Image (spheres, rainbow, N blue to C red):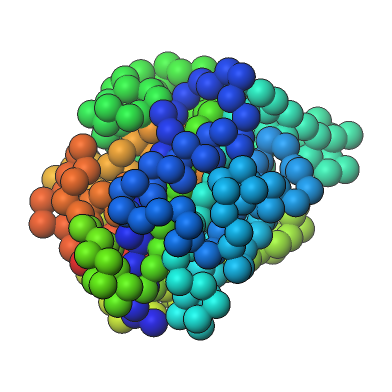
Length: 374
C-alpha cells in the first residue's frame, strides 16, 4: 500500500475560542474547507471516519454528522483512542480505500472544551481520586519525574521543546498562541504539577479539522492539485493505567513507529521534518526516543541547542504543535505535515521530502504514527 493512497485535501476552522458553536458546526466547516481544497463535491464522499469530541460523548455521533453534512457514506463511524484516534482513522480509511470499500473518505474531528466544558480534562482519574489524582497533568508529571530520575533529564531540556514549539507557532498566522518564549520565561512560568510548568502543558482549544483521502490513481484522474502520498502508518497500545505499568519511560510509540517505518521502507535518518504530539513536553521527548531519533534516555540532550527548531537536525512541530497552534488532539499535526510536503507551510522546512507525524492518547495509553512523502 506504499503510496497507493493520498491525502488529497485538508481543511480546518480557526483555532481558539468559538462560543455558541456546536462540534457539528465546527466539523462541517472543516469538512467544507477540506473538500474545497480537494476540488470534489460532497456527493462523491462515500466514507466518513470521525473522532468523537473528547469533551462530550454522544451516541451515533458519526451518523448525525453525516446527516448534517448531507451525505450517506457506505462506510464509516466513530473511533476512540483519545488523541491517537485521528491517525488511526486515516489508516482505517486508507485500508478501506485499498480494499474497495469506499473511494473518497473524509476523516474529521472537532471539539469545543474552551467555550463549552473541559470536565473530561479535570475529572477524577479512576479510583485514584482518594490520593488526590484529578485531571490529566499528574499522570504525565509522574512519567516526567521518573524519566528525570532514571536518565537525568532536566527541566531545561523539557523547556527546550516548549521554546521551539512557541517559536514556530509565533510565525504561524493560524496559531491560537503566537508568542515566543525564552528558556528563562519557561523557568518562570507557573508550576502546574511538579515538574511540569504551565509552558509544558498544551492549550485548551475549540476548533475543527478534516482531511480527504482517495487512491493515488483517483487523484490523478480527478487532477487533484497537490496530493500527498501516505507512505506508512502504525499503531501501538499500552492500555494499562500508569500505576500498573512495569516501565513508565517506555511507550507503545516504539511499536507504532516500527510498523510505520517498515511499511514506508525508510528509517529515522530519512525523515526531514516531524510533527510530534506534544500534549506535554515529556510526551514529545519520549516519542523522539521511541521513534529511534536517539537512544532511550538521550532525548533531553537531543532537543537542546536548537536541534528541533527550523535549521536544526530534526525540525519539529513547525506550526507550533499542541503547545502553540491549538490544543486539539492530533489532526492539525497531520495537516501541517501535508503542508510541509506540499511546500506550502508558513514555517517551511527547505527541501523537505518526508514527514513523520505522531498521535498519542490518554496518558500514553495509545499511539499512532503516519509517514508522508512526495
